[in-house]
Each structure stands twice: as C-alpha cells, then as structure tokens.
Length: 151
Ligand SMILES: [Ca+2]
Ligand SMILES: [Ca+2]
Image (cartoon, rainbow, N blue to C red; front, side):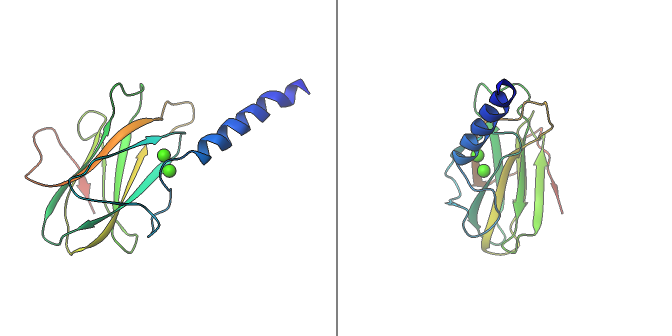
C-alpha cells in the first residue's frame, strides 16, 4: 500500500491543479474576451498549462501584446505568447523579447477577433509555473530591446 500512496497524492494534486486552471486551454470562441488597454492577470499553474484569451483588434492598427511575469517570478519562468487569427491560424509568436518576458508586435490586417495564448516554456524537470500580467495596447513602436517574429 505504501507504494501507492505517493502516486495517489500526486494524481490528486495534479487533478486539483487542472481543475483550478484560471483560463481555458483551447483556441476558440469559448476563450474569455479581453479588451485592448486592460491588463489581466493569470497563472500557469502546472507545467504545460496554456491560457487562451479572445480579443478584438482593428484592421490597420498596430498592437503590442505583452506577457510579463509578476514579481517575483519563479526562477526559470520563461513565458511565451502566441497570436492566432479568428480561424485559429498562428500569426505571431514571441519569446525572450524583454528578458524572459514575451512581447508581440502585430499590425492587424483586418478588424476581427484574435486569440492570444499565454504559456511558459516547458521541459520536464524545469520550473515552468508562475503568475503573469497580460495586456494588449494600441501602440507606438516598441522601445529598445524588443523582438518578435511574425509569420
Ligand atoms: Ca492557467
Ligand atoms: Ca489554462
């Protein structure tokens, strides 16, 4: 019986953490709607968690979408952002844009809903959980030290 105890506890902890995930993992209309200019906070509760948000962007406007670790970030919390169009196609991604924080610079080609996926680099054994602030702003160009790539 002893040998079953720890796997059981770990399973219960895992299920509990999955059940308390703050935002859905799926890119689709069920993702909670956030608005440009209003920051939200969330958590990567377990390694491999992703949190998906829905946002309306206006065609021709440039946006800066930032995922920033909330101080103090757990060591190794390396956040990453993905941006998808309304059809679920990936249009931009960012990693290590400012330190370990992710910043996407994106000019929306059309007025539509887009999806933002927040996650952390995940490798088994690594520390990949933490809390973050996520915000999209209609913006001026990124200040120095930013990078992102678009597809
Ligand atoms: Ca989460
Ligand atoms: Ca999630």
